[in-house]
Amino acid sequence: MQLTLPVHSETSSNGKLAGSSSGEELPRTRLLRRVLVIVLIVVAVTGFFAAAYKFHFFGLGTTNCWARPASVPASSTYFVVVMANEGMNVGFNGSKFQSGSWPIMNVTMGRTVTIHVINNDTIQSHGFAIQRYFSGFALGPGKCSDVTFTANQLGSFTVYCYISCPIHVFMQNGKINVNP
Ligand SMILES: [Cu+2]
Image 1 (cartoon, protein in one colour):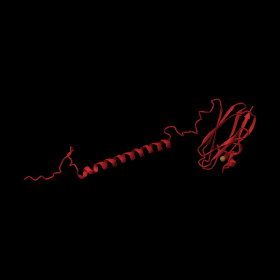
Image 2 (cartoon, rainbow, N blue to C red; image 1 turned 30 degrees about the vertical axis):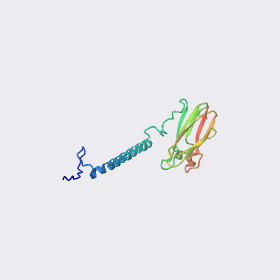
Image 3 (tube, rainbow, N blue to C red; image 1 turned 135 degrees about the vertical axis):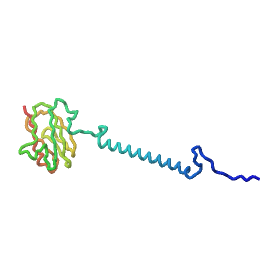
Image 4 (tube, rainbow, N blue to C red; image 1 turned 45 degrees about the horizontal axis):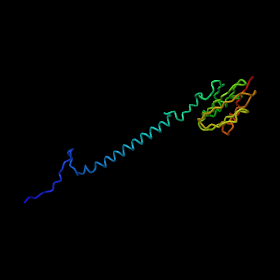
């Protein structure tokens, strides 16, 4: 009589014992590794796009306020007006320290005029308007915009901030002189 003992000692091709504890954990480890890789990819991609947005890799949201806008006609008489705080609220290009009107812009009658306005104030919004010529826009901190018009009426016109701000008093006395 022959006794057959069940033997479970099959070896797999890689030499490990099939059915051992390490063989059971392998699929779970693979799954965890896959999840980890996916998480890392998501983090990397999210990080990349966050950095791209922040540092303007793709030119999105890149308004360089200090460059002459491409939309400004080459023939325009061009001015840049800066509104600033500089830590002590200097207004239009330092208007706080000017005894008279500031800024003063002189143009010739009939010319196309473009005024590029930069709000370099880090806290306040400011308005920009021109008597007779422009009803105005308001710019948040760090924003810029421009206005183009034809100087078709002779005279001296007030350039001013039309919204209430702590340096309002220093931003009421700009001038544009339209000369013959
Ligand atoms: Cu203002």
